[in-house]
Length: 614
Image 1 (cartoon, rainbow, N blue to C red):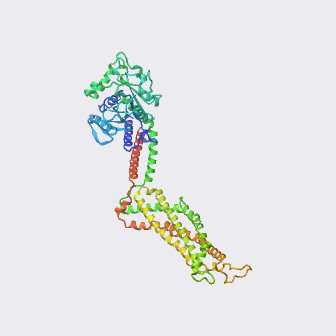
Image 2: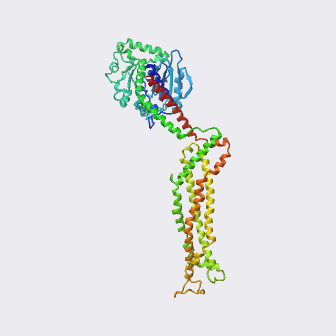
Image 3: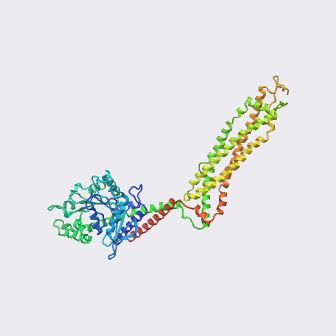
């Protein structure tokens, strides 16, 4: 079972490391990530409480920066990996994945330099963590997170908010229910004033996930001891308190070996009259084993939840990969097939807009049912056929000799000039439908999920569609104008033959010698022309929509991309590949999804294997 749990702890750490590489973690994530579901140990304490010494004692190596004030200015995620005896100890940073550090003084230097890269040489802090893995036969499998020490006031070079900033950073870690809190307190400080215990009490009032650590036991005043704390009488926790004896400053200056320091620590407890009865449960080695053992039980408890989160994440990633699509083929034939399929996908969406499966096509009907009739009604025919204008046109048409029977030329000129007004509404209808079709093309491209990956192909399809719509508009404009011109080319004679004849007051037909220039005569002419134009208006109101639909809408449905298809057949493989040049953001997203999916599938398989073997 121990081997099984070691495997499981190692697996959890691999998942944590992979999550970090993939950016799949973060204290401010809106939803729980796999990283947040995995247990870890967060080290909390005030400045100069001995946090660094505790960590170095657990690791058995001198590798952390030291100094006065805030030394730890970024979170340090420390993964300890137990190796076989006889292998050389080494360390790796996540930001330098191919570099191994065997000189641990260089590890300290890299931590300092990596901190300065983000915060500068100032005493500012940053929530962006540094990730460090240490491989050694002298450690237990464990993940520790070292955080900046709690402080009360800002010193020179620090913002006034530094104390609150550090507290907020620590809070973002210890708030997580899977986080174990390693609360560091110096033994020569009253436990009631402990910064670490204060933080712990806020998030873990029952003390269920807090491990209290008393440092500097050897520096207490003679005649005093910390038994009340260590035996749980001063402040009780569910887990036992552990006492630690740090290396002295003299030992640090002399670079005393950490293994020798551990031996001295053991001797201190064994030979101490105050603590000898607790010696087997004191010291950094015992603390590391206690944390590792507790971590095992937490992991065992969390396995069902972790497995559930992994399964849910796998389903979500597979669905997202399906939306993002497969990587593009390199074969020219396969690329052409892909492009044609994408064009057909766009064409389906476009036709759905026109035929009513999606909104938008109904706006074309509005052009015919509202805009065209309104434009026809607004034509200035009343002004054009006013008495004054009719008299002017009739008079000019007769020239120097008045007409004898009927003003034939005057009628024709009035009719032609009146019908000429219909060209405006006809062209406006063509342009309005053209605008709507272009808008539907734009919407269809945006709504075609398969096209989202390929911005270059989107632009090419849009350009080809707009070019085709422009051709359709020109054809439609010619056709609708021809309809108007046809009405001007030949007038319906029966209409005028059926007009009522002029009669006198007694009801007899007026003689042809009646004065043709009286006001009533011109009014009748204007009225006759207006009636004929009204009849033509009703005809055009029905025929213009037919022409527009035939030349624009129907053609758009049937042959919008035909010319584009012809051009595609002439393109070479390199040109086809350029059309399938993917959006770099989506490419990166697919790669990230694929890596996460590989990680989660591997994690699920390994967790299943561990559970079955257990």
